[in-house]
Length: 360
Figure (cartoon, rainbow, N blue to C red):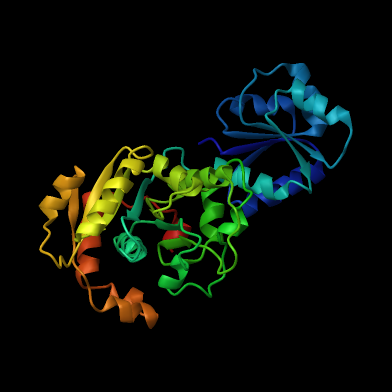
C-alpha cells in the first residue's frame, strides 16, 4: 500500500525534521535518499516532499511533472531555492523551521481518506427567539448519540455562543477568531483536535468579546475541512445572513427554516425564504408549536410553498435547563430529542469508519 507522503532527501537534518513532523501529523511516510529510489512511487504518492539537497538531481532526471510536490529547504532568502522549485515543478516551497505548522497540516491532509465527504445542513429561523440555537444543538447531540461524528458551527457572532448552550464555554479549544485569517487547505484531523468537544460532537463557536471579522477564505477552508472530517456538519445561521452564512448555505445539502406557528412569523418567513433560495438549493420547513391562533402546519407550508420536514413541539423543560446548564441531560428525552432523532435518521447518514486509535 502506498504511503500518503514521500520524503526525497539525503540530508539528515531535513529528513529528521520531516519525520518528526510526519509523526506529529500521524502520517506514514516513505524516505527516498536517492532520486532513483523515488521513481516507483512518484505518481502514486499524494504528497512528495523534496529536500533542496536533491532538487537539482531531480530536475536533471526529468521526472514527469505532477501535483502535490513541495520543495523543503532550510530558511534562506537566496533566489537559488526558488529557481529549484520552478525546475522541479513544485507547487509550494516550505522553509524549515518557519513552515513547520503548514507542513504538519499538509501531511495530515495527505493521510486523510480521499472519499471522505460529510453532509452539511443549515438551520435558521424566521423570527428572533424561534429556537434555532436550541434546535441546532439538539440536532448535533442527537447525531453524536447515533454514532455520527458531528460538528456544530455557530454562525451568529452575536448569539451568545453555542458552546454555552452545551456547557462547553470553559473548555479549552479554538473559537472562530483563531481561524479568522485562515486560508488554504486545512487538515480535518487538525480541526478536530483544535475544537472543544463532547463525545462525538465538536463545536466551533465565538468568544464572548467583540466579534472578530472572519474572512470568506477562512469560512471556506473550515467548511471544506469539516466535510472531510465529520459525518454531519450543522450550521446555525442567523436571520441577517452575512458572508459566513452565505458560504455555509451554498455548501449545504439542505437548509431548514424554523417557523413558529404564528401569522407574523409566517409572514417574516416568506421574505426570508425568498432570500435563502438565492444561496441554497434545498430549503425545507420546520414548524414549531404551539399555534395560539390555530394556524396549521399545512397552511404554513402552503403559504410558503416549502416541503414540510416536521412539527417541533415545545418542550417546557428546556428554558430552565438552559439557565441551569442542564441542556445536554434534558435533551436525552422529550419532544426535541424525538424530533431531532427522526430528522437525523431521515438524512440517511452512516457513521464513518474509525481508526483503531480513534475507536479506543
